[in-house]
Image 1: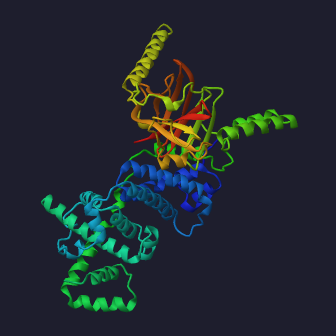
Image 2 (image 1 turned 30 degrees about the vertical axis):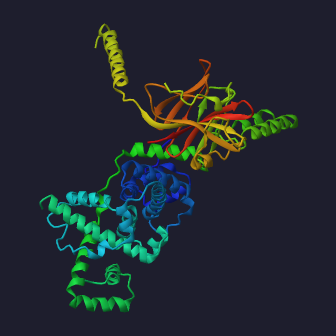
Length: 199
Length: 167
Length: 153
């Protein structure tokens, strides 16, 4: 049996083929978008294994729901929404299981970010892309789940405040506070890392 | 120092979330308020440095391995694709063998007995059991696979020595 | 290659294949899975037997047992262990029977029921994360024993 070469096909063509049951077309879609989906899961979960598992679960769900995809958005965008929802469910489970630290409760109630001095040094100045990515990675890992989620949904997923509020199940005011805290904390962390590394 | 609400409004200005009139007022204020301008610069720089962050992130598994797990899971969930080969349940096999009405009656009785024993509908799984009297069923929604072995415990499980060690 | 040399080449080829297969086996890393085995007594009785301080199973487990008919599920004991592809881990079910658990890799496990020193049945199946695999069987007085296997890793 000859297999169709899907490597040159457009995403829309592949999606149509996959909707007809062509698993090789779906596999090609996965190959094209897997890094993006994994990256989103990793940004949210901060754990490689969990991010792999959740991204795979997202693909399985994507396969099951293919009939519901009508092309209103790009296929990659549609898939990232699926993986984000899975990550949010998982994060909520984590939150129920863990004991909140005092620091996290203080972050939640807010206040500290209002008094942080403004960071005047550009955190990207003089850095290679890879080095900056490493620093951002470290800094993201130091945010709480609520702050990181708000940041990821706004900066990476480019959702509006009201969309983030709906997804996170909180008010727009809370989204604004969390986003503000996350940004200010990131700025401070990146500036600290810059100082630590002597650059 | 700026009021906290003003700081949040400044963020909303940066994100394009303010109504037009309010955004215009902030643009005017930024021309004369150095503190606000500095904070805006910091927020903007943070946003810029986050841009493209995820582009460098790569999935740490080969294409084939990653796909093989997804494919296996899809097949396990028996998605409604024509090419899938169905594994017959114990009861489906029995129905095939006992087509006449009398056979159907036997099957019905057996199904009732099984339902009494275990409750749920029998569902095919990939689990293999080397025990001819065993029954398997999978509750997909609950994420549970039950393997009912034919061997009964002689003693009450409840009487097991709690201090019994493993190994 | 002459006719006389052919058998010698064949012998070398076969020997090489054995060598490669042998070294692959020796160097194969053991597959491991961290598992919790929870021995559960399923019953319609409201309380555990007198003198036994068994607690009802956790709500999360209870939800997953909804397919079964009993009213109550008491945890007799639980043990956390690492199942390996190189050795069996024994989980006692009663004084006379136990389960041997072995990891097979790729989220697969092999569970063998040993009764009175003899193998009664073996099940090989998937134990994905966030799912449970439950070997079980009837016990006296219309009760049942279950061993709930759950991944910890």
